View (spheres, rainbow, N blue to C red):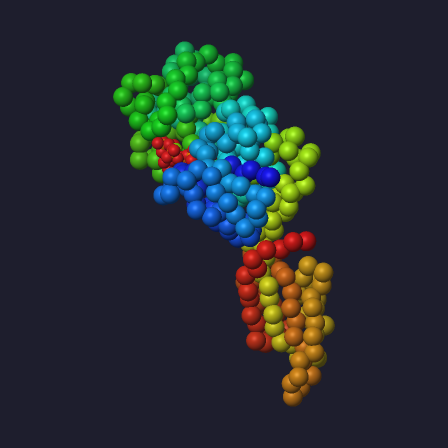
Length: 286
Ligand SMILES: Nc1ncnc2c1ncn2[C@@H]1O[C@H](COP(=O)(O)OP(=O)(O)OP(=O)(O)O)[C@@H](O)[C@H]1O
Ligand SMILES: O=P(O)(O)OC[C@H]1O[C@H](OP(=O)(O)OP(=O)(O)O)[C@H](O)[C@@H]1O
Ligand SMILES: [Mg+2]
């Protein structure tokens, strides 16, 4: 039996459900609305556990869960000894040291002896220790941005992604403290013992890889085939099939980089490709 801990709410909840659905392991029920905290999937050997993103590093470290999905910031804050397997490419964020716009503070050193409010006391203490700057760190559980404006702290260390919340709350970044990504994480012992863990990892990675590729199909007059082949190498070269048509024609299929489709189509049309179709790929298992 494999147990996978996933966020029961918050901003990682929905994208995590989507990744497992696309990977062919849909989460049956559970999460926010149902209050159900354990859920099944299409594989009877796999169970999902719903937990707070901040607790997932601990559950995975202790082996309550074999796998988990959570942010690296939360892993480091807990000091959890786990293995980071795959960057899931959503939920990236930064921890930033910020002060009110009107503050005279210009550099980290200017905060010597001051108070810093944060949801991440361990990462914050380590940051200031490395800089050799003595500060007092106070832990808050949210709405950190208002603390310097009500006299609770002189500065904050808080998560930012778009930067909107800092701007609205008239805060000025002084330094980046930590860069975070969301990872599939594993218990180190489970990783050694359970083969199915790598099946789950492969399924998730196949979804992530597929998002970066497109399947392209076209018809090419025989006289232009060589030119088209030069333009689209595909994964292992394009697949070429003869088509029943009045003039000698081939159907060419290939997997190509999604971010090159725009340029590619222009080149293909110039060398005589017709009836071009571009399709998304659900999963790509190399
Ligand atoms: N803009 C953001 N704000 C907060 N967390 C973010 C953001 N972008 C990505 N994350 C990541 O999401 C994780 C936090 O998820 P979590 O579910 O604990 O918090 P939340 O979505 O802020 O929910 P809550 O309402 O409990 O604060 C962290 O790993 C964090 O790095
Ligand atoms: O840079 P932005 O895109 O504006 O995002 C950053 C904001 O989002 C998070 O708050 P959240 O919604 O989690 O509320 P909380 O502070 O109560 O946890 C974070 O703590 C910031 O306040
Ligand atoms: Mg939050």
